[in-house]
Length: 60
Image 1 (cartoon, one colour):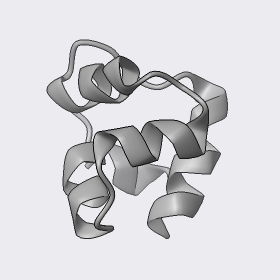
Image 2 (cartoon, rainbow, N blue to C red):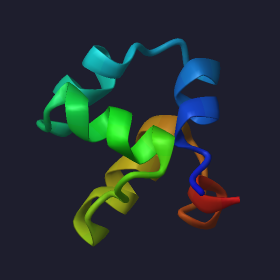
Image 3 (cartoon, rainbow, N blue to C red):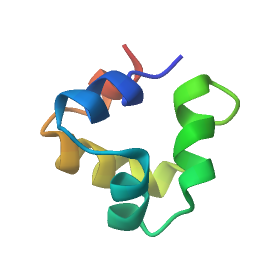
């Protein structure tokens, strides 16, 4: 399971806002958060930068 929802909410971003920052659909963010799917490898550094965390922290 990912920590993306917790980090997104802590950052004050909506799913739509995060999806726009990453140039993905809102449904992709939703799937990451509910564990249906995981972000592609190339998204991980971008997510970590947006949330100000390490890649490892995305999956704790």
